[in-house]
Image (cartoon, rainbow, N blue to C red; front, side):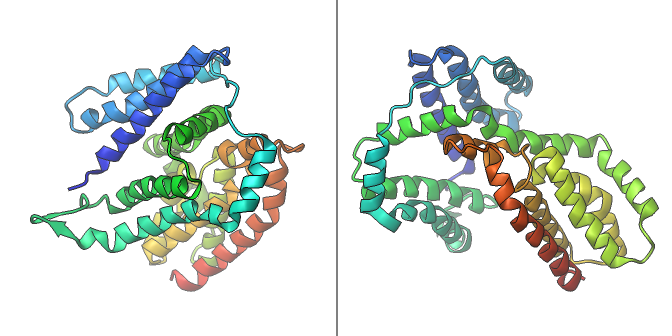
Length: 322
């Protein structure tokens, strides 16, 4: 049986290898801080398996997170000179390969769907091939490995060190912003445990007109949109707005279909992701990687789409979730 933790170990190992490369890169004036930052992440992926099974204390993970926050917050991380091809070489390669460049990216969802729908029913020796309850995450991991192999075949690359070096350069370019979704999702969970969602719910229900379903739908969707803009991630906004409006009002009071209400609410939150600078890895980092003159260019371009999609989600929820 293939277990999900095996892929967490693989991710951790990859981070550790890249961290070692960063620490040895003399072109990076902050190489030791950069290597320590990503090394702590890699070690955390591996060590956390024993924390989950209660075989190791969780406190070292907390210390590691604080150390990472200090390394990033006080500017101890940096970027070395990337080892990459020239612009002319990349343009020529793109012209030669054409749309085949999209095959590795499309491989990931195809393999993930195949694992989640088909492979999950397969068994070997009386045990399922994939760990029960983890078929989706396993499909994503297997899809990434298969996509790497497909990409190397398409590009006729025989050295695994090349994609590892490219991944390391991407990590250094994105920096701590790559971890922002996970951090903000954790922040949302903390808000929920501390009762922020309950307080927002009391304020919301006190001003909502009674038995006004459509206004409640608008408040939930727009609230998800607004909180996502403030917090930078729909996963952080979700526990707050769901505890405030989604579950007690739309599901509990108006008997809404819970999966539909919550799924559409999350999509409304994703609309906020399109227009917030807090989602640095989605909106600010791409502008830096593409060397755009306007760092807020992606947000400005995505704003009309975000507004249209938010309106569509409100209409869909009102028509089909009740």
